[in-house]
Figure 1: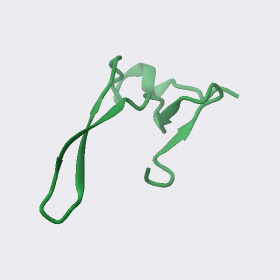
Figure 2: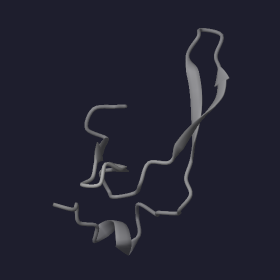
Figure 3: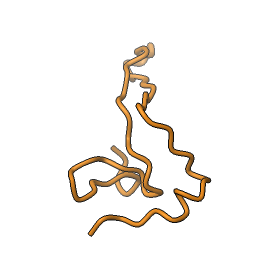
Figure 4: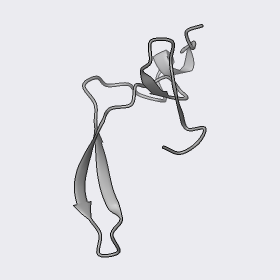
Length: 60
């Protein structure tokens, strides 16, 4: 995790700062230098430019 890019909401779900839930990370390959590469797979769509994202309020 990159510090400050995601955080837990009040029910323990990881979310990006614009409110989208973080999906599952799938290991796609390991580079020659040993660095893993992941893709994210989400069960729900959340457009960070949408009105829903603009109006997202973090639960208290």
